[in-house]
Length: 86
Image 1 (cartoon, rainbow, N blue to C red):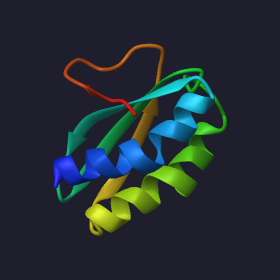
Image 2 (cartoon, rainbow, N blue to C red):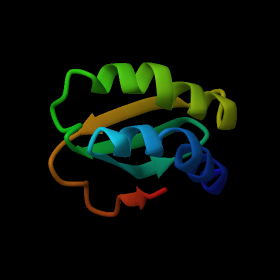
Image 3 (cartoon, rainbow, N blue to C red):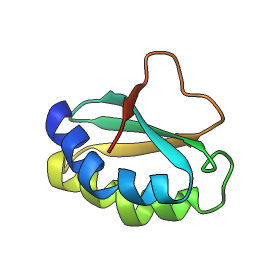
């Protein structure tokens, strides 16, 4: 599931986040919870909520329909977070 999620994020989420100067990290993924972290210009950005609702949640729902989505932002990624690059 994790690889499918990363591939979907790479194709759909990452290009749009990168265009605005942000980066996407996968912190953790399970059938119950997917935790994504945004850095760069996304850190503290009020648009992060829209990114979650309009981009990240629909992608996660296709891969893990029962998973809750947690999106955090900050200037640095949490320890162990995996960058998702285009």
